[in-house]
Amino acid sequence: MLVRDAMSTVVLTIGPAHTLRKASTLMAARRIGAAVVLDPDGMGIGILTERDILNSVGLGQNPDTERAHAHTTTDVVFAAPTWTLEEAARAMAHGGFRHLIVCDRGEPVGIVSVRDIIRCWAPLRQPTPA
Image (cartoon, rainbow, N blue to C red; front, side, top):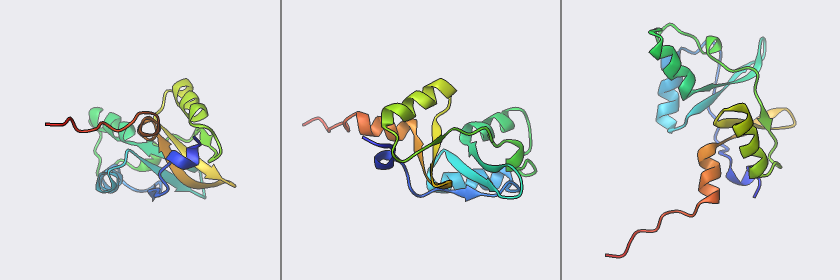
């Protein structure tokens, strides 16, 4: 199975000036764990995850004033839609992260998460008959 078969194609994109509160509100509304941060004038494409927000709040920083750019990972590993899920899982395990931005011709077209891969690899639990 390929990354394109498992990835989410609805990608939340935010700007580097979004506050962590705004980013977390948008992420929570979509029930997702990461947002792509687009900064065409600066860092390019980055990723902000729920863990980044949690770390900031845990340090006592104010989510109403902290900006996405200060917490965005810019040293991003990108996946291609044609990668196998094994390649994506290997990249995540090697890098110690749970999300990969999927790019095609330099543009983000999706995100694949550990959860997406597990859904593809493990059959859904069937209800036990009564």
